[in-house]
Length: 218
Image 1: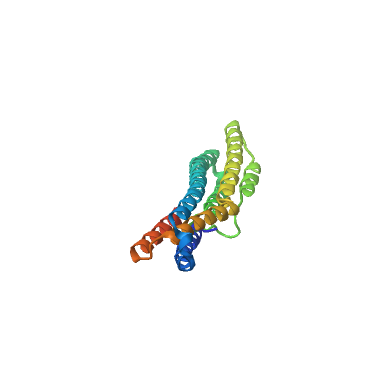
Image 2: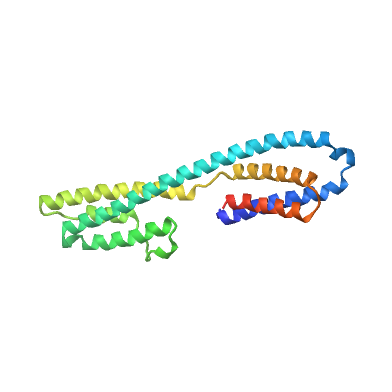
């Protein structure tokens, strides 16, 4: 799911909770808005806010960890591609068809991993195609044999890294966690609206806070 729409949805939900609380404030009897009631509500909402802060912090730490891992794997993937290219050049002219397949595969991998400007030519060249082409090379001396073996190993490593990165790219925050966290934020801002003074400054301040929270999810 696109992070922009997640953030927009959270903002709309939290802002709606604020405005709904302010609307419900009109219908609450006075004794439901006294200091004792406010203290109880503040206590309960404080516990919910503490849990929401903890979950949001763990969520941010998890996303950062995934980003750091993906960044390191991407650099390794690029380095392995370069090594395959150099190794095949060292193999000789017989490897030129494999080099063409490799270039097409680089575009395919970049496109799959989130670079739409690198749209691959059709039909797409997969890692198995490059691997099979390298296996079909017929070395004539020891140097070519070593180059072929090294290129095969690098291509296998590239395939493993690509699959790992693809899994990270397709994985996301569990929807249930987002729903629960958004629900907590809705309840928190609903309580803010219930006891907030009905004036433009308070309303705009709470809407800006809702926008800031929504932006944190993008």
